[in-house]
Image 1 (spheres, rainbow, N blue to C red):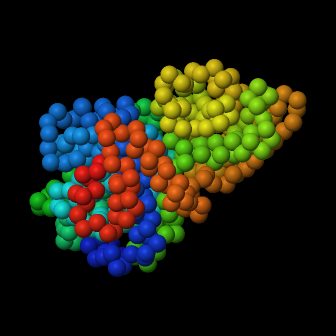
Image 2 (cartoon, one colour):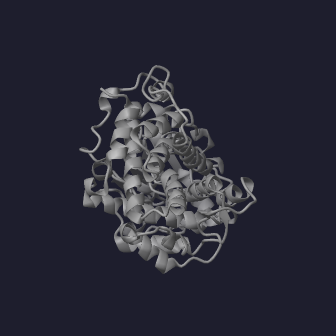
Image 3 (tube, one colour):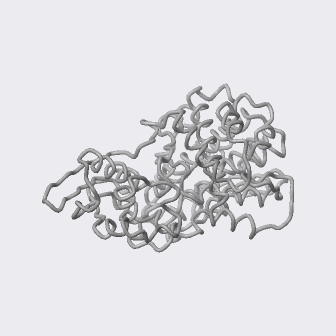
Length: 447
């Protein structure tokens, strides 16, 4: 069998829009639309603002999304990708170890497309190449990689960015192999930093590092051919306990992860492990007409992966609250919603929410796979009634997607939070028909 870098480079360089199933192109289009929307809102968040001001104070040739400013390409990629993950509202994929596959790729693709005058179809094709790359590299080391404390959005996303940018630059196969090998020296990102501004920075660094890897390869930089799958390479070093299972590597171009595994679009701006429980708690309170003051106890049962990720039972900031099952369930019950405003720091200590939060507990269901997003919610009332609901999947999954109208509404709500004026309707229309754009710069003028 060829080395992993060779397999991926062959797939990436040979991929054409005509090879990609129509449904997969549409899924890529929806993913980019969603990612741009959450980036516009994230540009106004703390992490997005910090990323914009900290790395560069000069102008450049690359658009900052949601801001009437430009930066040098590398700085813009870092800022835009960090903003895209700042609200934890961007999409996820189980096949990429529950990482966020789009956010490390969309900022680099738009930035390089702006520089190269690329078309929307070019961007979509490159996105597919990067997505399939991430899923390919995740299989041999999942779930040990995530269990070991790594954040796959960054550690696997860097390869997605490298492959996507390499495709957009039309690098030859040998150069793509080197780009992926260079990227193999760049993965980083610890789950320990969930609930801080460093988590969205993971996406920014993956986007920037992957872009840098492709640009270095384009100029002749080299890497070891076995940097991914050789002894002490990426797989060996990042597996966690045990050994990588190379038998799990899929056949690229015949099995499409984008179609079979899919992308899950977030309904709530918080850790994805909480979404099934939020939805179940909301349905229980609505169905049975439960008022917050009637509730005596709420028990959420979820996977070990969920418990590992949700480290903030008593959050003190909006970022910590995104990783707090008690807070999120309480917000769903007391406020009847979990929206962007729920994570404003001044709302974290709202007494009605705090009152319910103190009655919510999270336990592990050992029967669930480590990385399962399923959850059961049991509510006991003060009168002794018990109401329980199990939800196997969050809303908005690949199998139960948000409608186009719901997706467009999410985009508009996010775009309204951008720091500077955005042509919301025009940008939404362009993104929804991205494959028809002959020059992506037309879109960026609206952002």
